[in-house]
Length: 129
Image: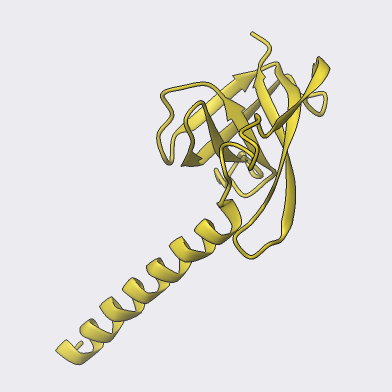
């Protein structure tokens, strides 16, 4: 390997990282309050079981004030977190945090538009404890 190949590989890595972060920001952009200051979450009158699951794991990709956006695990054997996008209610989240939720319950939905103006509605879940 010569210096030119190493430099081109490094440059390609930087470009792909920036493009990936931009794509995540585009799809995950969410205002924490609606334009009129109301809570963006539409709460259910009574929490329901989340897809009948006893347990699920999610990986946080965006931390909000009192919640986090996360991707649900899609392949337990390989540890891939590219399943459903969900909002998890709570505090003290950090990016790339893996959270296991026992008896997950859906407590509402959150609708918003991505920065590319694509409408998106995601479930809001919490632990049934």
